[in-house]
Length: 270
Image (cartoon, rainbow, N blue to C red; front, side, top):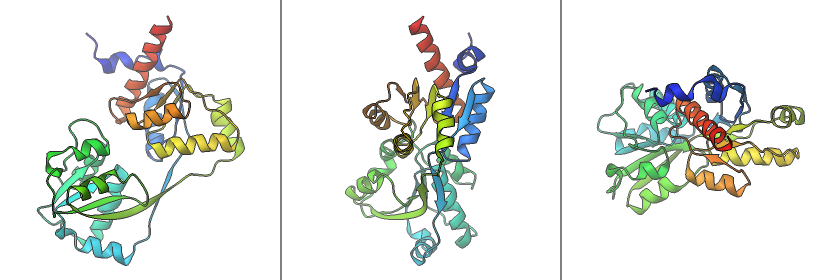
C-alpha cells in the first residue's frame, strides 16, 4: 500500500495548481520550491519581513545574566536564531542547567543545531501546546526568558506569570509589512488568481487582507492554509471559505496537506 506521502505527491493533485506563499523569506522561497517539485505553479509574496532590533543596554544585561534563568523559550525559529546569535557574543560556552523550549519542531531544531536538547510539544506547534508541557506547570518563583518579536501574542507571558513565574521578555526583532506596488499586487492576486494561499500566522493573514483592501482586490482562494484553529476562525470571519490547518508546518507536510485537501475536493465534486 502506498504511503500518504507518495500518494499525495502524485502530479495529478498539484500539477499546475496556483499556490501563493505569503511566509517571510527565506522560508517562502524554500516552501515554493517544495510545491514546484510537486508540480504546482508556486509564487511568493511575503506578507511579513523581520528586522533585527538594535542591541540595547537592557538586552546586554539580560544576556549577560543568562545563567540566572531556569527556562529559555523561543516562540519561532527566527526568534531562536536571533537569540543564539546574541548569546554567542557573551557566552563562548553556554551555561549548564538551563531548560530550553521551542514552540514547534522548527524552533527546537535551531536549538539542537547548537548542541542543546530543547523541549517541545509532542503534538502541535502553538503557544497553547507549549504551555501544556509538564515542566511548565509548576514554575512559581522560577525565572523564565521569553525570546520573541517586538510585538506578539501575550499568552505565554501572561499564563506563566499567572503560574507564578518571573518572566523576562526579550524582544529581538520587529515584523513589518513589505511594500508592494499596485502592479505587483495585481500580478500576484488578480492576474495569478491563486487557488491556494499559505498564510502561517494571524498577522500574515491580516496583512494580506489589508493589502487587498488598499488596492481594492479581492482574494478568493479555494484553500487558505493557516497554522492553527484560532487563525482558521479568524480566516472564516474575514470571509475565506475553506481554511486548512495542516498536520505539520514542515515544508513537505504542508505540500502533502494541500495535495490531500485538493484531492478530497476533487472527489467531493466528482
